[in-house]
Length: 237
Ligand code: ADP
Ligand code: UDP
View 1 (cartoon, rainbow, N blue to C red):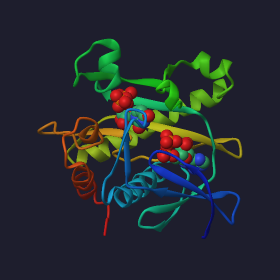
View 2 (cartoon, helix red, strand yellow):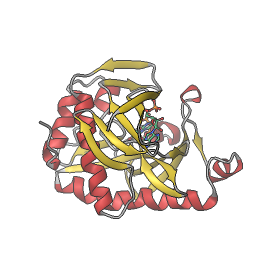
View 3 (cartoon, rainbow, N blue to C red):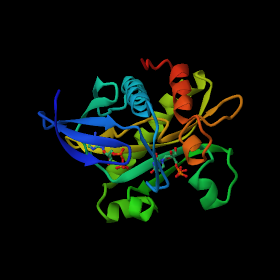
C-alpha cells in the first residue's frame, strides 16, 4: 500500500490518501501535545509505540465484536485504516474521576464511578473541545439519534472488553476517549486507542502511566507507555 498525498496533519498523526479511495494511512508521529495544542514536544519512539499499541488494542476490540478501522500495520509508525466519515464528537467513558470532570464538578480525583459515566465533547481545539449533549449533536446535525445511541453502546462495549484486559495487566482503566466515523452507513471505531487518549493507573501504587505524565510534567512518558505495552504483551521491536 502506497501513500499518495497528505490529507490532514493533526496534532499527533498525519493522514494520507492511498491508491485505494476506501483506505487511508495513519502516521503516528512523535509529537505530543497538551492543552489543545498549546504545548507540543517530540518524544522519541512515541509514534512507534502508539502505532503498535493501537493495533494491538483495536485487534482485541475486533475480536470482541466492535467494528474498527483496522486494516494492517504498514511500518513501525504507520497503519493502513478504513477511511471513515468522522463524526466530530469525542465519546468519553470514565470509571474513576480524573482530569476535566474533577475541575468541572469540584470532585476529588480517584473516586470510583458506579455506574461508569459518559460524556460527549465537540472536537474543536479553538473552543477547547466543549462538552455537548445529545440534543446539541442532533440539532446541529453532527449525528442522528440512532447514531448517538450506537456510539454510546459501542463506547461502553469497549469498556467491557478493555477493563478486564487492563486489569489482568495490573492496570486500572480510569477513562478513555473514542472517535467514531461512518463507513457504508455503519458506525465504526476510528482514530486511536493509546495512552495518549486514555488514563491508566497501576493497580497497586496508582502510578500514572499515560499522557498525564506529559500534562503534569512527571517525566518518563514513553517509558510508561512501553511499560503498559510490555504488561499487555504488545510486541514493540
Ligand atoms: P487532531 O485532529 O485532534 O489533532 P490527530 O493528530 O490524531 O488529531 O489527527 C488525526 C485525524 O484523523 C483526526 O482529525 C481524526 O478525526 C482523523 N481520523 C482518524 N481516523 C480516521 C479514519 N479512519 N478515517 C478518517 N479520518 C480519521
Ligand atoms: N482526551 C483525549 N483528547 C482530548 C480530550 C480528552 O484523548 O482532546 C482523553 C484524555 O486523555 C482522557 C479522557 O479523554 O483519557 C478524558 O479527558 P478529560 O475530559 O479529563 O480532559 P483532560 O483534562 O484530560 O484534558
